[in-house]
Length: 481
Image (cartoon, rainbow, N blue to C red):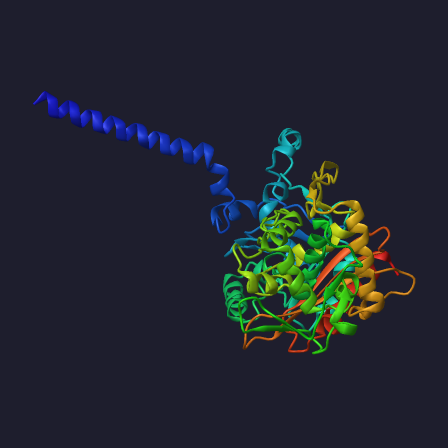
């Protein structure tokens, strides 16, 4: 009789220890994670009783809290809400927080460990707790230029400072109004959210850092970088550039966008092939280099890495094991190559920054409730994607694209702009995607930009027609011209 009782006691003891361990893990180890989860309404209700700190673009708040005099003491308001929505996100009573409102929540609520001294002062002084401020890296003029350029289109723009990785612009179209989602009217919030969810254009998708599209001919910059890195090719190396290229072991062909050969006697230099965006030359070049070389170069520029800026970006990708025909297609940014606007801005920035790739970041400073700077983000190198010499050569080739090739709409008087056009098909029944990537000034870049227009129609030269003018306006805004 005693043995079963001892056994039951032992089991109950083990279960009690397991329960205590589980409670300890939840309340101590995972408490912060549970508290900061999107949709934690209990936490949100507590936070509505304290003044949430602002999100700043320069000295100006683009998200701030205002007193209501109601049960929910503070209301979150967004100046130019749709303009900055991909950055701020929203702060919703119903759906929780997104964007910097989520990733920087502990700063904005004043719960970050950076505010230990400030919280103690507030406690002893009997003051209401206040949140800290987050200063973004965004350039207001560049953001506005990108937003205006995308109006009426579906797509995204990302601009980066090449030397540091600072994100100067992050814009999507269509966008949404975070003011409605952050109101104190649950019915209005749900109705607006349902409308956004049902929209086939997906305005809630953070296009600049999440939307993956085939990069088309902008990927030829990566292929050209791999060619220079191989030591087998220079900008003046001669490549075959016929009207069409027979894919290895296939009856399919790759054709040039204009249906013509790329040079006399079907021959073209690497420099000229980039300027005129010669598909057949780069498809041939991809097969000469091989998939491994292309993948290595792409990964060195950031492909296959999910960057946190601190918003988490989707990882751009290069096919895992393409055969020769697929490698040829991948070399011109087709097949299963996919990239975000952030990634292609990083490709341009790498060339402009002497081959060095910088980690992109969106938060410049964390400030206390009194706006005193508590923390500043320091630029961090991701890696070396090219030698400085190869980067200079490729930059000069990209200048040729704008001055003498397919990127003429990016020209700015008095400024040497380096760029590359791109167009890609996303499917038989889908419109083409138009791209343009660039950096300027070419000799000492202040900005690198990527523009993607997802509903470009079927025009083969739409990268220059649709995307290049937007890139030009963003560059002009940064250069204040």
